Image 1 (cartoon, one colour):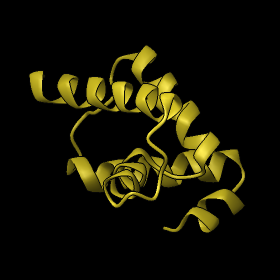
Image 2 (cartoon, one colour):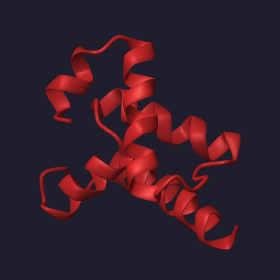
Image 3 (cartoon, one colour):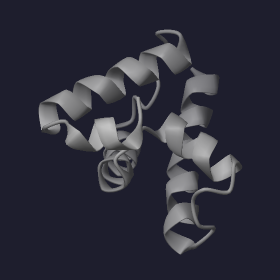
Length: 87
């Protein structure tokens, strides 16, 4: 799903699309089970109009700035990944 497609969805549609993408990436595993991690990641996903997985891909490709806001998002993405690995 592209940024434009995700941005065009209403809140419920965006939440559903993000959940679907997460399930694809985690192969159905329970990621982001901590409500603080989930809330923080969702706020970045909504602001940027894309899933964390897509943001990671875009960041790796140099398509997102390497600034303080993206660094904060990366912190939460890593926290979610650690929780998924530990569980």
